[in-house]
Length: 240
Image (cartoon, rainbow, N blue to C red):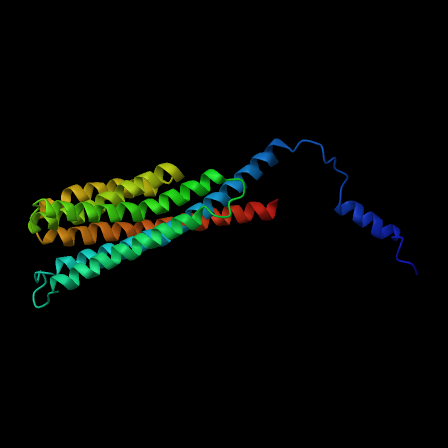
């Protein structure tokens, strides 16, 4: 029997599966809105996909880096770190996390079709982490050369880096409209200003706990939000 003709039952079934729709007919407003919402969720999930990783990395950096600085002068009885070792741990943590932030920020904007502005924003934001962290180190060196004492440097470096991180998170919250990032940024700016009042070396412990735990909490909240966003986008795609 030739396969060139469909049986009546097959034709009817095919007609049921493919209703006659005019391709030029405008989409239903509700369907258009749902499509736009789904596309927006997809873009947000890609752009914000790096946030939990960065925040967790900075949380660990704060705990390890500032914790190491706190141990320089034997703040914990029976245990102390040599100054070069503690400073090396802090610098290494900041350098690695800054590089990771820059790399993930650049990646976040890639692959977004028709969204050159989003790609530029992600790249600029990621690069700013590295540029800013490096500039603070260079500025600190210049201040030391100009006469800033080692005692004052103990307060400048930690507060400067925490303040910078807070500003960056506030910017991220404004760009991507994420309230947790904005709140975290405000918190970091506040603890950067408050840390020197705890005196040396307790200001390191204060920053390690107040900053590190805040970052880790934000990472968890960001991950939960990201999963909900992706779940909503996936559900909308299946329904569509």
